Image 1 (cartoon, rainbow, N blue to C red):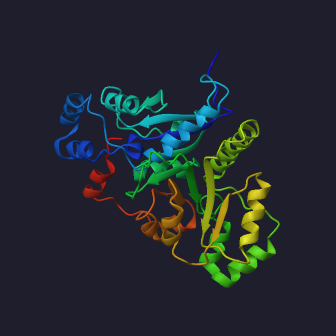
Image 2: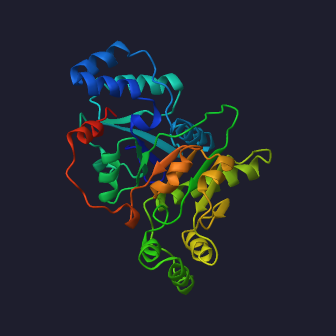
Image 3: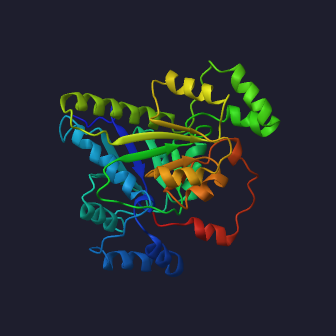
Length: 327
C-alpha cells in the first residue's frame, strides 16, 4: 500500500536551509566539484552544524508525538537537494545525528528539485538558494529563501512560534498593487470597499491552513489531557493598520483559520516587534522589512508579487558563481 501525503503537512527543505554549509560551499566554489566530493567523503562522519531553519524544523517534527502512531505522522519533512546521492550522504548522516525524523530525500546533481513540489504535496519549500526559490515561486509553488539571520535553539523552549506578513505571503498582491500605484489613502479606501471580499491566496496560504489543522489536533489532545500546553503559536505581523485590518481578518476567517496574535503596525519597524515575539521563523515578501527582521529572528524571503518584480539584467560571472550552491 503506497504511503499517502494528501492529509499531512509536507515541508520540503534544502540542506542549505537546515544546516550550516558555509565551509562546504567554500570548498565547492574555490576548488571545484571533485575536491568538494573528496571533502564531503572525508567529513562523512563529521555532522554539519545547525542552520537557520533547524529550530523551526525540529519543533515542527516534534508535533508528530500528537499523531495516531509512528506510521501516520502529521508532519513529513522531505530533503530536496542539488547534491548527488554520494555527496548528499553527509547530510543524511547529519539528520540521523540530530535525531530529526526525516527519512525521505530527493537528490538531483546540480539541478533544482522544485519541479517535484506538487508531486510531493509540499506546502512549503525552504532553501538558501535564491535562484531555486525564485524559480519555484515563478512556477506557482510555495517557496521561501532562508536568509542569513540570527537564530537561537533553546532546548528548553518547546513552543513553535511562526510569524507571517500578510500581503504577498498569505494573501495575493492585489491590495499591495493598489498601494504601490495609488498610495496609502487609496489602499485603505480599496480595502474598506472590499472588506467582505476575501483576498486571493498567496504562496503560503495552504501552509497556514495545514498548520491550523494541526492546531485543531492540539486542541483535541488537550481535551483528553488537560495539563497539555499548546506548542504552536501563529502570528500575523503586518504593516497594515486600521481600517485595512478588517479585510485581512475576514480573509483568514473565510479560509477557516485564525492567528493567535495579530500585529497591525502601520509602518512601525517589524524588527522591534519580532525581537520581543521571538518567532522560530518569519515570512515576508519585502526585503526592506527583512533587513531588520533577520537581525533578531530566522527570516525567510517570499519573492512573490509586485514588490519583487524587476527588470532581469544579464547575470555577471561572479553572480553565476554565487548562485551555484551545493545544497
